[in-house]
Image 1 (spheres, rainbow, N blue to C red):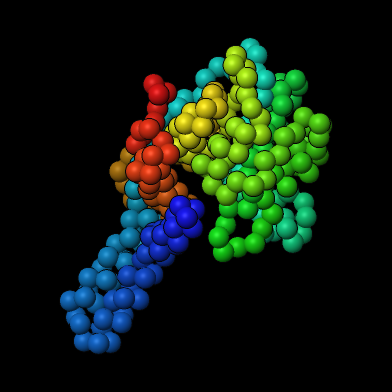
Image 2: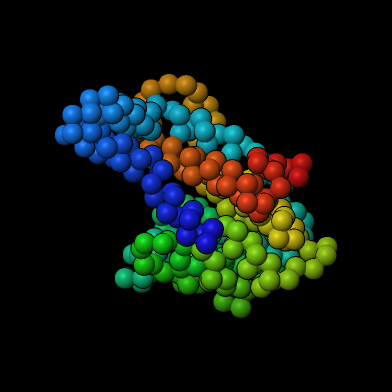
Length: 265
């Protein structure tokens, strides 16, 4: 139920969709002569679009998430690597085959690099099809083609292809791997996603060393206009809003122990 509610709610409140709904509400209100409601809906919708596309608000919201878990030195001994899905174009790969990467593809690239540096480490790819509306190939189904092409042998891979969100990534990976005391596992995911992912793996009883990748900000954007192109700015705002809402929802539901998890626990 949590999965379905979260997907439906996110459809309505993600910045672009919310702006569209507000503008449509304003138009309907104007058609029925409700001038104040029409003005309010229009102003709010335009404000969301302007803030998302033309300002650095998205980057400013992402920066504290990305800086929460600095990348540590690589441990001398690593037993395994867990990479979270979200790096592939699932719908395209389902239709065309191959291994097309999206903007979070750094997760898979970094995993391939780590696999070469750590030839004894097992590699867990965690990710099914997490979309409620779109049909696509899960990352755990696509990853063997990419990693194999990059020289990672199939016998090193552990594929978790049932999870639909980060909570299920943690729970299903823990059950599949059954990590032993004293083992060291790296957790590879986007830097903005690391606070929520690390907290969920901790809650599931899967101790990991955070290995953030896929940074979207320099950390120096500050307050300003036109700090990035509008498309990337809207994407940054959307990601940031989703991640902060995700942290709040997971804390409220008891799936994590802190609203803003950090290295101290």
